Each structure stands twice: as C-alpha cells, then as structure tokens.
Amino acid sequence: MINITITGAEAISSRISGIISRLADLTPAFETIRGSFWDIEEEQFSSEGGFSGGWQQLSPGYDAWKKTVAPGMPILQLSGDLMRSLTGQSDGTIAEISPMEARFGTSFSRGLEHQTGKDRLPARPPLEITDEHRQQWVQLIEQYINGGGAV
Image (cartoon, rainbow, N blue to C red; front, side, top):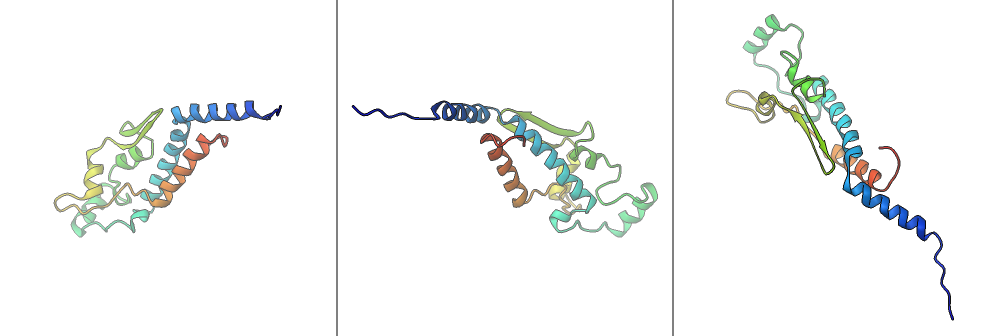
C-alpha cells in the first residue's frame, strides 16, 4: 500500500478561496485606481495637456477676453469646474465603483467637447490615459487578486 500525504492543502485551499473572493469584488483595487486617475488628471491640467503632447494655445481673441474675465487661469480652466470635476473635487465628478466595474470622469458636457473638439473649438483632451497608466492599473488589479496586500 502506498500513502501519499499532501502538506499545505488547507493553505492552498484558503489561497484559492481568497482569489475567488477577490475576483468577485474588485472594489478595493478600483478605489486605488480612482486615486491614480485623479492624480493623472491633476498632472494633465497642471501641465496643460502634458500627457497629450500639450494643449493648443488659445486663439488671440479668446486669450485676450479670458485675461480680462479670468486673469491667470490656465487653458481649460475658465472657472476651474472641469478640472475640479476630473480630480474628484466637485459635484460634477463621476466616480462610480461597483464590485466588477468602475467609471471615472465628469458630468460636464464641455469635457467631451474639449476631448474631441467641436466646430471651431480644437481638441484639447482633458483625459489622456497612457498605455503605461493602463498597465499600472492592470498590475494593481493583479496584485489585489493575488492577495499581494493593500493596493
């Protein structure tokens, strides 16, 4: 008669159960990604489109008008509402997290107009998520699923 003893079966079973449980609810990973998204947006606005190669300068006429009504305000920040909404600081912020899905953005329609351009308004994308950002987020989710500690 041959006896085979598997040591650590309970630990393996516990680890697999943890992975299954974390796969069913990615909320903690999404919460970390939300903070990362807001940090990216802070950088995008402070660099005036740095992740997009820099935003196109304002037209001379609009620039002159803006200097009289909002002196010192950077591009895409007449009132600052759009920037605040994309950095988690206003009622216009979209940050919806559920166990299997997350949505981040702005409820201000002018965000889409700036993203894609409209009529004579050139595209100045407030959202520019790079492949590097996406890869970091995938790694955060993988770390969370594998039980690698706090994300």
